[in-house]
Length: 139
Image (cartoon, helix red, strand yellow):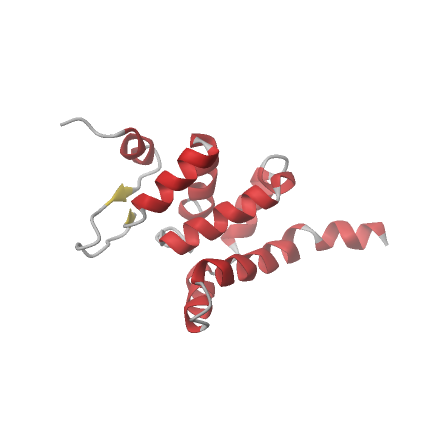
């Protein structure tokens, strides 16, 4: 049986999707539905950038939770000036953002939706790193 297009795309990023009844290991995710949703709505390029923000950073390599993937995707859609014009700076910023700790904070705020809470927490951290220097220069 040949691999599906999503699985083939993820191979290039070193990510393997596993069924939810199996425990995740490093570089594995249960988030097939979330990845399909993002890919179908925004395309392969956006999904790859979203996953690179997680997978190709120092401390977040295995934070491949559906809520985290969705929150990062939401931010990149909301801020195309970051995602498209400053992609390298965005990846550098993610190196310094502890996605696992932020996800823990979002989970602790249930019953609020984890993805929405996490999106706000990540956005605030990115804003500190990507917007404030520009604002200081404008003053």
